[in-house]
Length: 350
Image 1 (tube, rainbow, N blue to C red):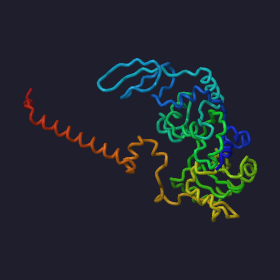
Image 2 (tube, helix red, strand yellow):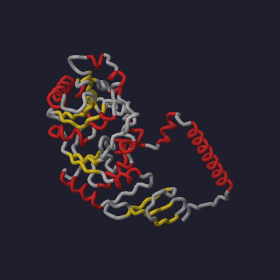
Image 3 (cartoon, rainbow, N blue to C red):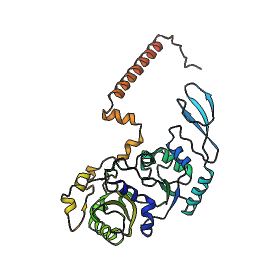
Image 4 (spheres, helix red, strand yellow):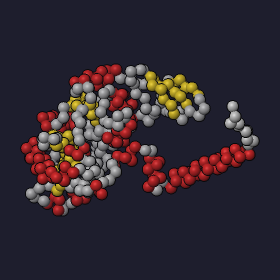
């Protein structure tokens, strides 16, 4: 995977080429002050109907805005003024209204799929810039786009291309997870297909595998093949209830893109998958017994707990055990104090 291939997979590069075959979208240049805000490590503050947001946290944040601090028992209640981007906000609201009032947000490459748990509706559906900021500020995928989009490229010695970051707003569409498929293309040949939601079992995929594979192959040969800037790439499609196929996204052909039920070694090695002539390899979960948890689940809890459960950080485990021991000792002391305290007789008589 080369840096040029990553550049070519930016939404603003491929959308004009395949506009007729994908979801209606609008692209807005991302101002530098908005980028700086998204990358700031301070307390998340987004502007809504009010000009300030109440934030409660255990320690003082590094946020530079003026703060009105009030002390309570063991927490700090802070009123932090949310940053304002009036011109950009106006453009975003105009775009959202033009797209029907609800949008799916993303940057040049990624959507904040790892952060949908933080939204009130547990969805990536957004109605305002505040909704978008909440997701973007909580997403590792978005941070990756902004800080290291060429991390896994093979030509690391070459200078990084200049990236003009953009906010992509896509008209909100209710896509059934079992209808999304990821397709792998090598040398302009469709070599493999996998459901995007590969962790779940979908009975209709088992029953309609021939129709699904045929529909995707037809869509690829008629609209995608030889029309993209690269000959190696990955594209996502959605097959609706009428059997029509729509382009959802384009991704680089490399490890930065999730290979789902395939491995990148078998996709690139020139083995059985790449040498198949008649039809692409089509893999999907064939039984409920093989259902797996979503890979995005690890983003829904603090990383410390993930490290503890996998044993990746011994020091965190030691600290955790010390904490549990201290809590147990405190609990025992409280029980001893209660037992030694004089008991007051309470009569049941009125």
